[in-house]
Length: 181
Image (cartoon, rainbow, N blue to C red):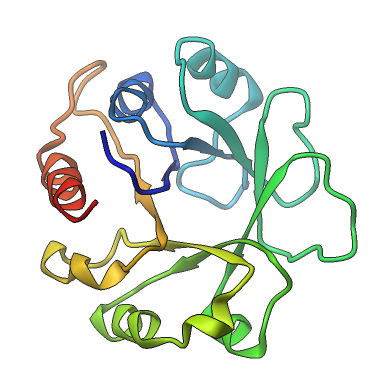
C-alpha cells in the first residue's frame, strides 16, 4: 500500500476505477466539464461509482454542484470566501502559487522537469496550510523523486476493449512511489 495522498483523475471506465481502488488511492475523480475529452454524464458516473468501494468520489465541475453523488469537488476557481460543504480541490497554475493562496487543497499541473524542480525547491514556509497535489501525468518517471511530500494526481485512460487495459506504466509509477514512502 502506498502512503502518499493520491487522486486518480478523469476516470471514464470501470476498469480504471477498480484498478485505482485496489491500489488504495484516496480519491477517484470524474470530469463533467463539457469541453473535456473525459467528460462524463451523471448517469455514467453513477454507473461506475456504484461498483467501486474505497476511494472518495470527486467531481470536476465548473460550479458547486453534484453534492448528492460526490464526496468533494475539483474546481477551476478558488472560492476562499464561500463556505463549502464538501471537500474541495482547486486547479491552479504557477502564477497563482507565487501570489499566495488561502489554506486549502490545490492541484497544480506539472508540464515538465523544470516545473517539478521549481516545486521541489520552493520554500516550504510558503506552502504552509496548503495541501498541494501535483498532476504529474506529463512528467517522466525518472524525475519522480522530486515530488517530495506532496500528493499526486494520476490519469485514467481509455480501455483497449471493455475490461481490457494495460497498466504497465502506472504499475511502474506506483512501484517507484512505494519505494519512496
